Length: 428
Ligand SMILES: Cc1cc2nc3c(=O)[nH]c(=O)nc-3n(C[C@H](O)[C@H](O)[C@H](O)COP(=O)(O)OP(=O)(O)OC[C@H]3O[C@@H](n4cnc5c(N)ncnc54)[C@H](O)[C@@H]3O)c2cc1C
Image 1 (cartoon, protein in one colour):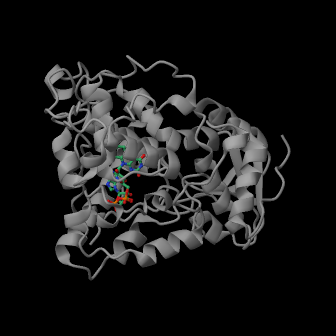
Image 2 (image 1 turned 60 degrees about the horizontal axis):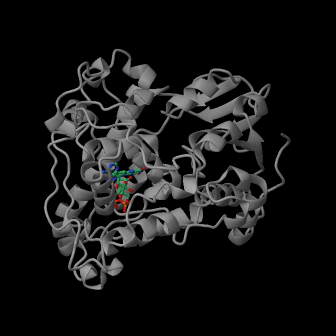
């Protein structure tokens, strides 16, 4: 497939029409129903303003609040963090000088993101399986798994708590951490579905959806990667969304009034027979981390952008200011995943804005075919799909991934074990 027409500049609304026309057939909704997120625009300007507006004061107390919306303390920075528009170090530095308890709690969460990236960089697709304790993985799966638009159907919309949450997921492509735990626990612990179709339902919609953090979240909530499954009941709704039950049609017959039975999942069901030995030790942490300085010095004709790193400070972009940037929407991958159009709109808005500063060529097809024969500079991305494609392309210079914590060889069995092993690598 040839290059796609240039993205419309300075008109985020026109980008939605561009996505519908050129990529709509690859989306969950189909070309006629592609929309932008109701809340999160793509692009560096939106990322920078969201970070500038974020005040960490009160974060520790209010991070888990769900409703009403103005009671929330979560930063809502994750879509831009996910795609490298806000590097973790920049976000870490932004909160310096805030109240110490809030800064500590917020930076802990940034470290959770870094831990997720380390775990995924080391184990890759092995994170599809339960890491530590048995929990239903792929089966049972809800009816109609091939219809991506119905992936969220198993969450009953009769309950006000699930209706609010699933509505936000589908409309905005985002959820606070607390409601991600509600939904994933409800799906697996209470309803008994395998956790991977649920993970895919999230991945379809979340603008911050990454296999790294999404899988970690599901594995930990359902007890496959943690010591205990998380139980979701009306108690949390009353605490985190006071008053929400008052308008619920099921307020007098609440299906989640009582604590759920967690005995059939996760740690209670027993340990996995042979845990992946890489959970305890990485024999090649340098390979996991990627280069620590630019690798290669050949001539560069273009900067290859990946969805992992789309910020205007992307290391490869910054090092090659005169080269055009190239981005390929991976057609076979997108056809398989059937993501919601709002995820593609977010990416396209980001690329359109970048196009105001430098030449950006966007194509659709097989990445390896589209970019073949062009000497490329690229920023290393710590995900398995990057390595596969990069090994078949002419990568002249590979720039380092901007780790917050350089990967170590020690355990990633739990966040606390990983953090302890990171020791002096942890940022200050
Ligand atoms: C089932 C489940 C699925 C999840 N899927 C994803 C996902 O696909 N992508 C994703 O980025 N996060 C995911 N998370 C983690 C977390 O819920 C989101 O990062 C957070 O809700 C994003 O909102 P925020 O930016 O307001 O976070 P804040 O609370 O403001 O935290 C700031 C940043 O810290 C990081 N962070 C916070 N909590 C976590 C966490 N538990 N794990 C990893 N990073 C964290 C994120 O980068 C976040 O933007 C998931 C959690 C669960 C329980």
